[in-house]
Length: 161
Image: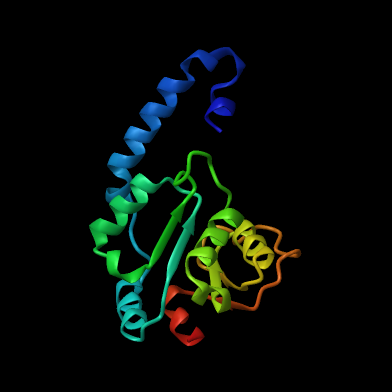
């Protein structure tokens, strides 16, 4: 993406561009990222009910862990898979597969996501897909995704258990 943004005449600046972007993003991610309404209360209830949760995200590990630590959410997730956890960048399908391989309890899980890619990845891994209508993918073409249910806000996660 950075290469595309810079264009063919500025490829010599790619490494510096990426370095500055990562620095800026990682320093400002906490200041500019607010949880959805009722997230903390919902996570506490799910945790009390012993609902096992994992994260599979296309984001880099450093800012995700920084964000999770900032909000003190470490105890709510038994697995966090990020695109850069391995020596190569993984796609969502591979991250979900790694979660399933680590803990067989997730084989009967459902996957909540807000993009078509989330849905297709869940379908590929034979997980029930719950569409988070409150997320980023509202205007995407969902016609190829098998959606089990739609939730309108994070607190509706409680209705799934």
